[in-house]
Amino acid sequence: MDYIILGNGIAGIQGALNIRRYDREGDITIITDEEYGFYSRPMITDIMTGKRRPEEIILMGEEGYRAFGFKFMKGLSIKRIDLEKRCLYSSQDRIKFHRLLIATGARPKRIKKHRDGVYYLRSIKDALDIKRQLKNTKKAIVYGGGPVGIKAAYALLSWGMPVSIMVTSPQIMSRVFDKKTASVFQRLFEENGAKFYLGSSIEDLVWQKGLKGVVTDRGDYIDGGILIVGKGVVSHTEIAEDAGISVNEGIIVNDMMETSEDGIYAAGDVAETNTGPGNKGRVFALWHTGAEQGKVAGANMAGEKKIYNGSVSSNSVEYFGMKAISMGTMEGEGLKEEIYEDKDGYRRFMFRDELLVGAILVGNIQGAGILLNAIKKGTPRSIWKRDFLSSHWPCLSIHPNITMEVLF
Amino acid sequence: MKEIHFIKDRCIRCGACSVACAAEHNKNHHLYDSLINIPFAPKQKTVFQVEQGEALPHPLRCRNCEEPACMEACISGAMNKEHRVFSNWKRCIGCFMCVMNCPYGAILPFFGKAVKCDQCLFTEKPACVRACPVNALVFVDSHDLSLVRKQKRWRNRKDMDAPLLRARY
Ligand SMILES: Cc1cc2nc3c(=O)[nH]c(=O)nc-3n(C[C@H](O)[C@H](O)[C@H](O)COP(=O)(O)OP(=O)(O)OC[C@H]3O[C@@H](n4cnc5c(N)ncnc54)[C@H](O)[C@@H]3O)c2cc1C
Ligand code: SF4
Ligand code: SF4
Image (cartoon, rainbow over all chains, first blue to last red; front, side, top):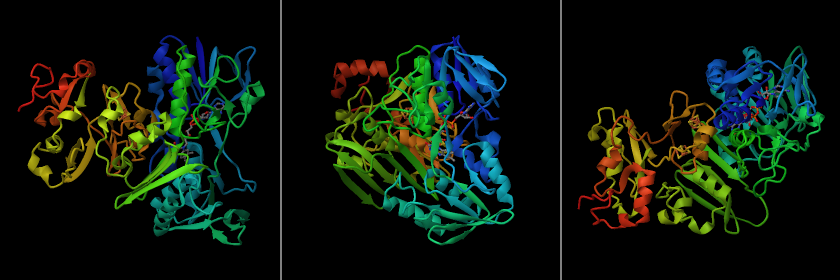
């Protein structure tokens, strides 16, 4: 059996590892258009500031691929998939496959006014480009208050560069955190040298032999020699779409991560799932959901039967020593909220009827995983004790053999 | 593989397990060094790690999962599995994706690192198990324990024959 993994991100690697788990013989080929082995995409902000070298964030080097018997083809861009002949085409090569995992990830959304000095952050290459530009820059501008934008801003601030952050919505990380949490973080960032322009978008770029600054639609002028854009991502679906695979926002997959075509699977930032409560047409662009999906896809490709139960979108951040985690749904009709607050943390929970559907933990994040699991599984409210929800909860131990009731 | 199991009914909240853990994870394995920093919490089945006078409490009940969610979620490759799941502090960047994903809450975020039970790697029995005066903590195979559990014998502290029931009073 010839397996091809298209994409060398977390989804692709987890796919390959899980194929190997069940199929010791099959040929597994991993294809990427990048020049590096499997690396940690979220850590590229450290490359940008030079805190780490590219080698240091590589999670699987050449010898790792060899150890698992993967054939690794880097620097190879796939242009077309032929479903009839079951072939992949690059500009020169033709690669045959029996089963294919499309894990091509996503690319940053572009802004309309593109000039030199405008950068996006998605790969090591992008990060190195930014690093080069940062050398002759005194001030940076970050456009976008999502997790990626804020992470980039944080990296720059802790490196010592003043940053102006432009956010279209009236708060930062509006998709992830509530107002209160966002303002806590905003204050921390401001104390550390960031300047926020909330509710602003780009009106024009001021460009004179290099980027000089940005004019916002509110009429503010922001000074800065580099603009880093983090306005979300779009899935890399083009080649799948051209091949005739059903595509909406991402490649549509069923609960075995199989696409509309037989033997072709998709996972990660590129896949659109319909599994799990409230996950209609949902594209997750997260590391751990990519891992979950890749794992299921890999097992199914190797002939196992593994069902994907849907993911819960969740984010974990730590900036200036302040930890926060958000998970699940925080807004919507018929949700009841419960807030617990004390000296070492703030916890906000959302319940729909008797089910926990969302949570935000700030400060004390202990046991967040239990809550995430409870949201996934739909554990009824009655088993949660007050102590459990507030930060002082007495027992962290739940054994799969012992039912939860025994311990609570 | 042997695991640490906690039998809730037996626990008398003495906190000996925490103290033992603190001592074990101390440079010279002596309680005195660690006493300064032990945050006693009643019935919190945590173990504590102490280094250079800083207490790093962590709960002991990592399941060393077959497919560890913490490891899959780790973005830096610090969380790893070799028989037991451990986090390599040299690589850990403190993003706490693992804390968010461990379904048992077995990882604690402290001092910017993921801290979890190491089952006292180089000893025969973990320190907490050795310290527990009522055998509320046991270090056995999950399979053996479930047999005893089925027979409900562990409920009876006086049942001397139950393999896990050599309580000292
Ligand atoms: C700066 C930054 C910070 C982040 N922080 C977090 C975080 O804290 N937590 C979190 O959960 N997520 C975070 N993410 C998101 C996370 O990195 C992604 O969700 C994850 O990497 C997606 O993995 P993937 O395998 O689906 O796709 P990708 O990692 O994007 O991999 C896609 C692969 O496909 C290859 N490819 C694409 N098209 C082709 C083609 N035509 N031919 C050949 N190869 C191709 C690419 O080269 C690439 O190797 C962050 C992302 C960024 C950019
Ligand atoms: S830390 Fe949690 S997820 Fe990781 S192996 Fe232990 S119990 Fe499993
Ligand atoms: S906190 Fe450390 S061990 Fe946990 S996911 Fe992050 S890098 Fe990995």
